[in-house]
Image (cartoon, rainbow, N blue to C red):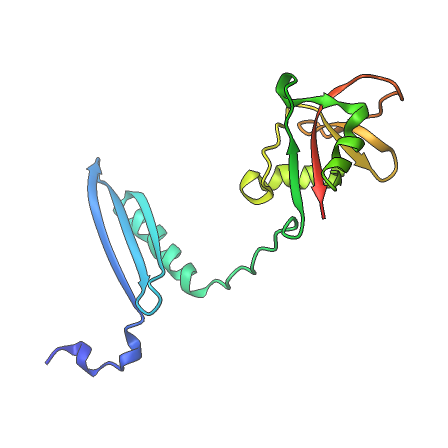
Length: 175
């Protein structure tokens, strides 16, 4: 008779499979996979170093997996919006800043706000859907200043004169 035959059936919810490799100088590489048998979900952990240190790090990660509260579901602030990156034949897909509002209107959209552009840049292209070049100027709207040119890398906004020709990138927001 095996010891596992006396356990209740729901005790077999997870499996843990691990391996280690000797690196050198008393150091090892440990890999562990924890799998939920019911759902098939699995998490992998790896650590290297002296055996005691590597084992402790893996044990802490497995412990955290089971005992840390689950983070809340991520709410995408752009889920109900479509960000449209305007591409042009100009250098670096720039458009004449003076025509930004008209261009966005042709897309049934509005110019992205300063805050939205900063948020899209921090979230990245896989969430926002647009790839923000931090070192290039963008046309944005600011609640107090109106139409402006923003350089995301420094978070500096510049007001342009009414007939000043300035080439910027443009992202329109369709609600």
